[in-house]
Length: 489
Image 1 (tube, one colour):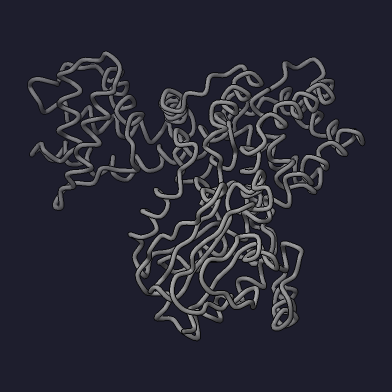
Image 2 (tube, rainbow, N blue to C red):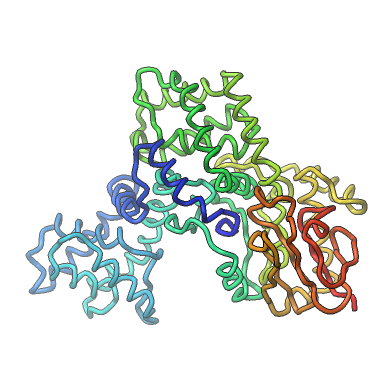
């Protein structure tokens, strides 16, 4: 859903803002290689050393390759792994043609290294050499490349190339800024009935509702650019004599407005995680005491500046209603698209978690159980935590009563009017219609935008109204920001 809620028209502006603020180029393809090589030289150094030893043995039984040095072999392996576009390539008893092609692409993308050595290693990693030594290398690589890519892409690159944090998530491609509705429809339509639909997990770097709010920045790029420059100037003295870390700052401003309000303690915990994972000024294995003291001082300076906190709160308040609407939209889509909706612990209410250990805080289940009982009847609440739980309860109850409808065919539906592109709608089994908003900051009250329901009478399971024919979006979402309609006749 992250791709759907980001305004594609803001890509250039936010890229320029990121580069101007941080002084770093936004180039995920190049920086991905750098990040993975950094990881293989740091956190996963021993794993690469083990693979190098196996590769040395495999080369040693080859007349053509036995004279290559250990350093040459290690460099070649690292460059190959730095270019993989998937966790692993598979192979062995069950060859994977797509994985084989991904391996070939990674080899072709390496720096100018010895092509004979690269060809030998490619064949070995693809299970195409008959020796026991080559197969040992191939099997061990299958167990290790996933960790290299996960640590390099998700735990390093995603803390460096922080153009828009709602896109810096597990499984996300940082080169892809946003998607038009047609691409999202195509992906959802191919979903299997038993596939998992998750919007937050133990591994996400910020809660789904934090991401939903941060995505709104893409709809207000000019205001964001001006705001962070004001923030930068006010917080500058917090670094003391240490050179400011602009990449960390840029991520911090997004995190603070996305999760606001939050305590300074939570912010400090996030900051330690973010900077050590980025591995640019400090790391888990080699923490820089002077830098980390300055970073803590900078966070304290931000939270100690009443005027700055007021400005952060004001920006968060501007983003919040649009982020809340995004949250309800992605929740409804998850509940009604093909697959099984999954709710990570505590996300039934507003999920303001940041990366672990923040997202592993105790969940007040008794409070949620009490709210479920309170929300059994009555109008939809206005605040996001209760509205989200109310929505989940209503739709899950509908799924329980008539599961066949939610298992039916998926068909995109289009709105008409000046804001039609801001409407995401689809039917299941031609009798259940989901209608959710996107990019609503400039929707002008959904002026002159309608959706044709088609034949029959439709009842809104959320707003309670009865509709026929063509209905205005403003009317459809008058009582609640999203709609789920069922055909009654």
